[in-house]
Amino acid sequence: MTQLSLFSADLTPPVGDDLGGLLAANGRLETAADGVRLEIRLPDPWRARALVRECRVRDVDAHVQVDDQVTVLRTDPAPALAELSAHWLDGSIKVVPRDVDLSAGLMRCWAIAAGRPAAVGYLLGLDPQTPDIHEALAGWCAAIGLAGSLIGPRAGGPAMRIVGQRRCTRLADMVGTPPPEAPTGQFPQPAHH
Image (cartoon, rainbow, N blue to C red; front, side, top):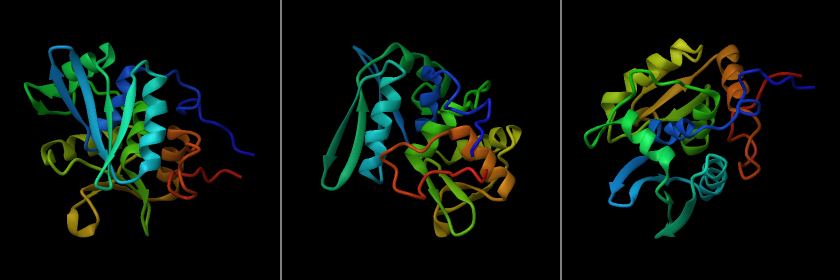
């Protein structure tokens, strides 16, 4: 029987800041006259379907487009995204907020958007366009018990590799139940029995 952590995304209420997980990955915020939108290119269609639901429970409508085998999730403007913009953008440049809260919901959104198992450990994909934020994200992850190593493109990155049973179990506990769309083994799995 699996016991849920009190800090699991399954037990914490969803909030708009959780969508920062898409920005920790390769998501982009776009500001227009009608508000702020979020867009992210995803390597797999299942991720887009799962993220549409994650957006919806945070009062953000999202839509999926597939063009030339590229899956893109785009949101409608929403107040939660304006708040994200205030924290994650310095002008038009993506930055890690000084007071980022790597909550269970944020980690869940990040794992859905850009997480994948590796031969050793689990990888959380990072934005190749904003390498300046990688070390800050790794530092914040270490502060919540998910210390990992940064890996570059030659090793399958950019990504942060989480290794060790305790850290991988902590990650699995935080991100909660795998989305129903996730293929078996693609989402962090708890080691509880």
